[in-house]
Amino acid sequence: MTPLLAPDTSRLDRQFAFLAEADKLKSVLRASPLCDSSRRENSAEHSWHLALYALTLADQAGPGVSIDRVIRMLLLHDLVEIDVGDVPIHSGNGLAHGSDATRAAEARAADRIFGLLPADQAQAFRALWDEFEAAETPDAVFAKSLDRVQPVMANVHSGGGTWKTYSVTWDQLQARVGSKIERGAPGIWSWVRERARAFFPA
Image 1 (tube, rainbow, N blue to C red):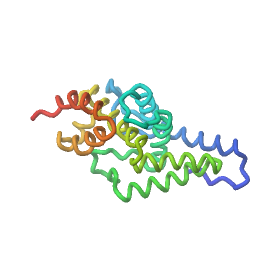
Image 2: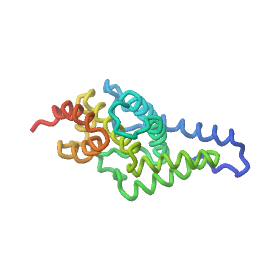
Image 3: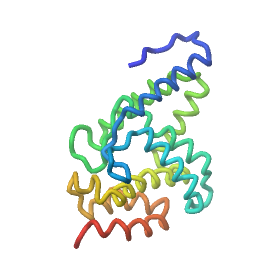
Image 4: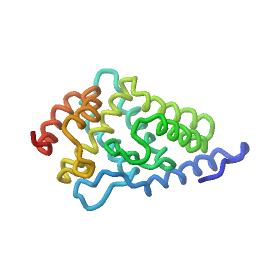
């Protein structure tokens, strides 16, 4: 892990230390495949793709949603995976998605990684990360919806992807993913659900 920076470290030194640390996200492999099934995506690619989702699907956001803030949240939301790794939503192995242990590990990672920044940026970035995790504001609810829908579409395009790997049922998909997408983007879930349903024979 990157050592803590001295209190008198310059602003630019801190900013570039953070950016160098963020580069490690490119080495964190996710369970989700690329749409062409050629390999698994990494978490940095996932974050970039989500930012593009937000920009492209902005017209599906609810009242009061700031797409600029959503994009900022999505660029930051998975930096904690540098320390914690990807915790697949459908996997029962290792840390459980959304468990107390996972949340605590991610909070420690957020402390360390955002703590590399100058104090004002550290506070601002951490506040955005906390807002995303809480999923209570319109911006965070829409951001969370997109975070759930992107892997669904990767699975659709790749012929089932992680649904096959983890023997996911339709009811599990609805509860773990569909309800979250529908909360912030009902129009998107209506469209996506129709395409996902074909992979879950009755």
